Amino acid sequence: MKVQEIMERVGITDTGRALAYIKDALEELNTISETHVRTERMDITEDKRFYDLPNNAVKVTNIRCKNHLNSDDEYRAIPRMIGDIPRKDADGV
Amino acid sequence: MASSKEYAYFIRGNKVAILQKDWNLSGGQTLGQPGLNDLGSSGSLLWKSPIESITDGLEIEYAYSPEYRIESIASADKETATSYETASGYLRFNGTGFSTESTVDYIVIDGSERWNGLHKVTGLNTAHYTTATKYSGGNVTDTPTIYTDVDVLNDESDELDLSRYQANAVVNYVKAKYAEDAGNIEMKEYFMREFRIMVEKHDKGKAWGSRRIQSSGIFR
Image 1 (cartoon, rainbow over the protein chains, first blue to last red):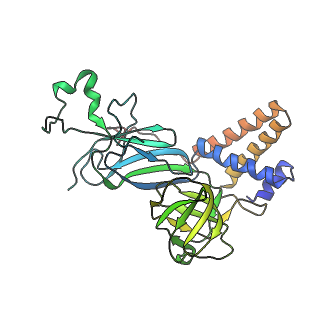
Image 2: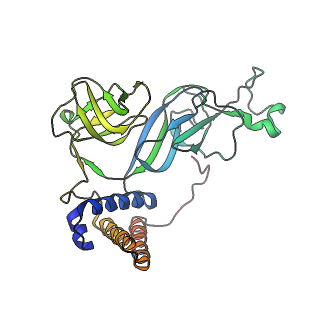
Image 3: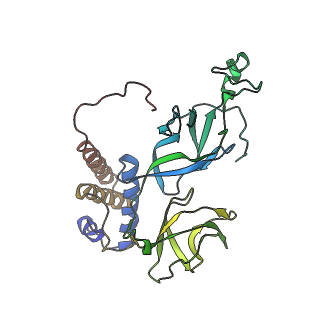
């Protein structure tokens, strides 16, 4: 569906405002139900604890690590940790 | 053959923290289970920052907002950067032989450890693309793919990259926002409810059959 068709259905003429709300809708849509999903790989660095989430990520759907609980180079989902980690982060980021 | 490892994560702001369980204790012994000194309150000390570097070791799956569409992935319409840096407070991707066609208003970054997604271009050069994205860090070696043939949602003739049913849900969302602007909260709530119902119905429409719980290890 084109932006113009959406504007006609809503009954509006101001394009800039309509586009802003449509972009909001796309984000909201992806937080409720993932319409566009992609996978990104990055290097794990020794002693580096914090890694940037992808700039355009609206919702993280899975985090996997290579060789997690396997030795076949498979990527497997890793669990979320709850609670404080007493050991200090070496890179201090 | 690579050895088995054990990881966990937590989210802190816009970063993900990766922790690895380390079985090599300070005494120099490699144990299959924690020693007495590591039990109790100090047992969690076994979790620490990754103890070794792994190329492509982390895989993040995420949803993104489809505010753009890559029109072409042909080699003529993509470049490979070699690094990024700051240029007067803005993000600049460096490389060689970049396209300088005047039609390149936006670029999509893919394969970067930080900058994936859409960026507005403010300066074109064969050696770098300057964007309108704020950045104040140093020069970082990164080799993402840069797509230059991108259609961005910025005028009435653009088409949403959604099914018709999902686009109808977007119509309800926009109606809700206009109702909210007009101070009509009742109507806003009605259209937001319609929006959510349509999104959920679309999701349910794709799931068929009985559901099964994976038998061993829900995190695998």
